[in-house]
Length: 74
Image 1 (tube, rainbow, N blue to C red):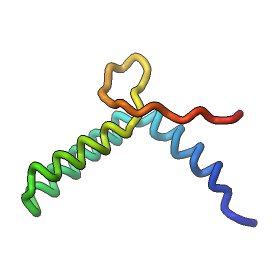
Image 2 (cartoon, rainbow, N blue to C red):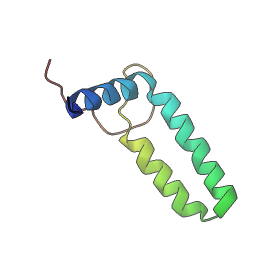
Image 3 (cartoon, rainbow, N blue to C red):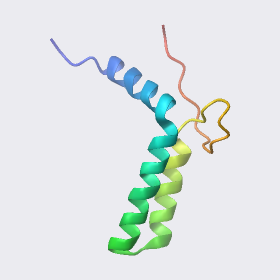
């Protein structure tokens, strides 16, 4: 019995699609913590922005994000 990476990928995509707003909030909080702890505000903000841009838009929410989910075989 091995690890089914396609199944893991599909589950991760589903979670991001359903909870992208919560993930974005968590990334923002982690960035704030890193800035307080280590400084380097500009670099941390760039990383936070890149991560948030990788989270797909959620239909009808108006949430920011530019990445589109990959189509999945059903």
